[in-house]
Length: 377
Image 1 (cartoon, rainbow, N blue to C red):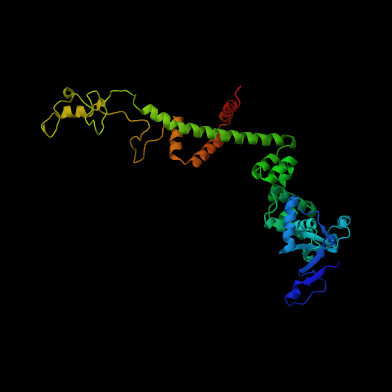
Image 2: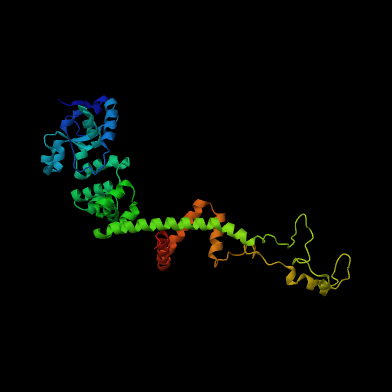
């Protein structure tokens, strides 16, 4: 069954070229057995069979975006060694392999393609076309992107050529390829999104035998950090209750306090001075009182209550007194009360990160303590 050709140029009123697909894109409806998928497609995950079947049923109703193909002749000029793979197919798919696979699953006889010979003008142009659609739509996962760059390095003759083609540095090319140094099971974790790319690149720099252990250590560190943050939240939540219990007066105490009902403190309260100790101070009734005696009464330490630890103290240069940074419990409790829970948890993570980087011995001791609490002997 021959393919049905429709020149896009002719639809616009332009002259049809002598060799279809040489410069102007040509829309074709081709039988699937006339098509071959290039082995240079970096994409590994095309979806499950059910997903491809559902996609094929949509294509059966209407195919809005055609695949892009080049002729067999143009493709083999670039890679003569691919002749056996291409077989009898007359066209090679540059991008659109998922549409091809979905069409095969539901038994579509043809698929719409755009024939563009300019895509095969060089190896770099073809490989770029293979990647471009997936990259633009962000369909490739980090490992597939690394495979794509690695393929270009191999086919173009080195990282320098790839860097020049994309106007990037050689270091950028190396960073993209680094993920391929991971062992296969860890590559799968990167593809699924379970392992962050930043962590993956760090682990990829390790020898293969130690990579799995490094990832397990990272998982243990994250678990302990979460547990430490949770313990800090629990301790900080319980702290205000303990603080109020410490400040509250003992039940059954007969000590009088100043309230709206009892506006005259008893003689045992520190706020009251004995009449004999005050002397004839200066008052509205005694304008000629003894100034010295009055001063003595005002400056008496027993008449001034001690400041509470959990209340703001005097200000220095308009600023409140500093937190007691030598009292870890008080500082953590204070921050917990002032911060939103999410911000407090993030602060705990930052503290653990600083402890790990700046005080590794104390950090290891904390991890050991938390591990022993998690798995008591």
